[in-house]
Every structure is written in C-alpha cells, then in structure tokens.
Length: 143
Image (tube, rainbow, N blue to C red):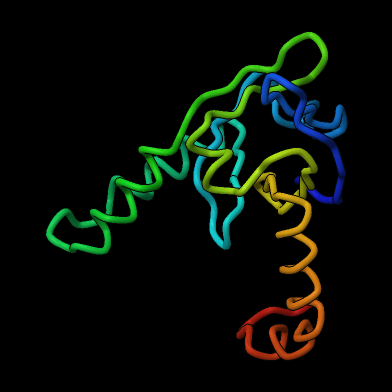
C-alpha cells in the first residue's frame, strides 16, 4: 500500500526521482498515465493488469467509456527506474500535470500520484477545508 507525501524536482532531462520507499513496493517498472484533477497516476504492473481487466469490460457502445479509455491509454507509458531511482516522464504526461520543476509524489493506496507542487498545494488546501464534509458523503466507510 502506498502512502505519504514526498517532494522532488524534475532534473534537466525531465526525470523524476521516486523515493526508495515507494520504489520497493513498485518493483523495477510501473505504468504512468493521465490522472484526475491534473496529476499523473503511477501503477505497479500488477495493479495495471487489474485496471486493464476492468477497463476491458466497459461497453464500446458508450461514448464516455470510449472517451475515457482513449485518454487513459493514449497518455500511458511504461517506465523503468534507472540506477538512481529516476523515471523519465513523457512530454504528454508532463504537460497534463503541469510539471516544470517542483513535484510532489503522493502515495494513494494502490497507486502513486505525481503533482506539480503548486497544483498539489492548491488541491490539498481545498480538499483539507472540506475533508470532514467529504468523509460524511462517503457511504459505507468506517474508519
């Protein structure tokens, strides 16, 4: 399970260090794709296989299903870590997430999320203000 918040910078070649604690759980490679709210989702290959199986069940007759899967897969890339624990991010994903230099890597259960620092701070501040209300709206969650 992924959790925590880490700050790192893109290097001059557009590579990002993924913290060792997260890399240990991910393995030698992961799949990165467009995430929600303007971030990048990163999945271990085993989790990606589960997502692929779920997406394969979406009906081709539904326009939203086609649109979502197109965007989700067209932005996806498999990335391997180099010896320093860096991963190269595609220009498409960097543009999607607004990544220029400062990044925040967030562990979220079965995936990691990569955010532009400013975007994460804005999202986090907003979500934090309504954290209790969000929790109340979630049915069947007992912590």
